[in-house]
Length: 467
Image 1 (cartoon, helix red, strand yellow):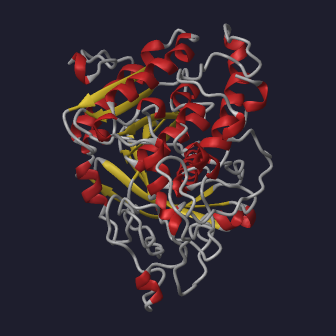
Image 2: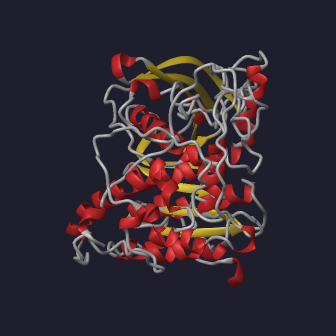
């Protein structure tokens, strides 16, 4: 890859101002590439500057090699890997996820409540984190730890508001969000907001994205007793408390989510929603490094679907985290270059429905995925040599097994550099787009093997056609 191609950036961002009408452009659409009727998202100048645009990049059908430096040098020794990782992170930040702020360095936690659950065998603590400029940002996390033993490896789960946590107000969803329509054709508030409904009225609670009352500590501990009884801590936070998952836009085309949560504190960064969630997971890790009940050298990050995507990103950008993303779909584990068959989500689909999740610089590759200077296997390779497992469903229509397989194959050379090929795993459970007990069992078996040396009769390198 040419040297100028290193860089990383952004996602769709920005703010909600209570405008009262919708705007839409009128030119004709084209079948491939960005629709000319789209209302652009204003650019945000970041410290990273710019990289070549799609018209300056070469087309390549092959997966960009994780082991070849930007100047063409092949990585053959471990001492070269750190420099290559920094190149890859820059490229992914610029083109894929957006530039995230640096770690704030001032994360502190205050215990809000504590109780015993699971017949007194597990302690639950609600912790409020504060951090950022003038410690103005906060995040509630729930920490479940077994009463005997420790310190424990921890599974960080991106889910709903932790028990007892503050339920934050939510922006409404965008007017064409979740309908399979091009969300860049409209600006302004959702019609219900324009008609007088509150801009912070919550959408229905689902997958941690609504604002229903959080569950009790006892119910969460019972549901995830499998994790706790196997000697892991469970740490829960709501990613929407970091970045709101909405396609609502301002009249200038900017994203409403950039006026909420962590984003106003860091105006010079073009990070998107997924990067916001990943950055939040790293702040959780900042706190856990100072929690005496947690073994901070063994932190696992997981979540399903969009939360799986951000778990993958977090593991790629934070060396403390071991990834276990679940049913990640388009923009997740599976390679963009191989997506599409069987109804699986492509780059074009993701940029039509969810451009707010990604870097604004990714949009230019609609209809030209072969111009990508990276592919999704780079995220997996960046986790090397830490254990990483992709958990998929064999009937999940939005994720193509072959695209996942190509990412695993493309990332393996990075693990092989450290003699750690078996630390990159995959498991296809018998389900569709879901996070099931079978996924939890496979995850814990995988990490028991790699973190505790417990043997398992499972293999973590097989795909549906081989089972």
